[in-house]
Each structure stands twice: as structure tokens, then as C-alpha cells.
Image (cartoon, rainbow, N blue to C red):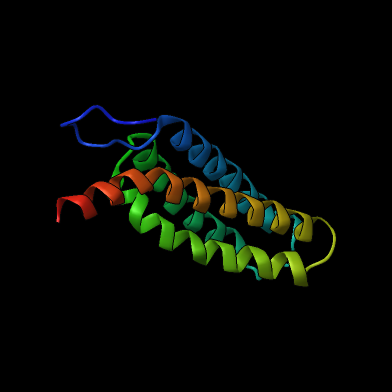
Length: 127
């Protein structure tokens, strides 16, 4: 999908919807983990903190904020690390939620990188 000449490229709305949906899945998985996993007693507080970060990020993603998409592509890797550890080391429902969270983080990462590609191309061409 080519941009008209002389316009600033924009993030593809379809990719933003995919990234937003992945964030919603990640929020649900993060909230459910303390109830099915063997987290420490403070697991619910940690899940609430992670959820607040993800909800804030979701509001910025919904507005197609390019800067938020850039920094979140690095932040989501922290969620990926936690999810992959849960998916491979936990058992039962906790491992299943870890797998769901792993898939959600990968989908988010790929969607964001694909969405930012036109912006990066334009920035390189402007130099």
C-alpha cells in the first residue's frame, strides 16, 4: 500500500488493530496468572502493576502513537521473557497461559515492526 507523494507515512491501521488485540490477550493472561499459577503472595499486586503498564500502552497504541510503538517493541520483550519462562517451567493452566502470552507477545512484536517499517523507510530516505 503506497503512500501518496509528499505525505508522511502512517502506521497501517490493520496492524495497529492486530497489535491492540494482542495487548488485550496479554492483559487477560497477565490478570489470570496469579489465580492459576503458584505465584508468591504478592502475585496479584505484580499482575496489577503489569496490567497498568499494558493498559497504558494499549491507550497509546490505539492512538497509533509511533513513539509508543517504538519503545513498546522493546518493552514487550520483557513480557516475552516472562511468558516463555512460564510456558516452559510451569505446569497445567499456568503453562497454558504462558504459551498464550508468548504467542501474544510475538504477534504484537511482529505487528509493531511491520507497522513501523514505512516510517523507518521514510526517515532513512529523508537523511
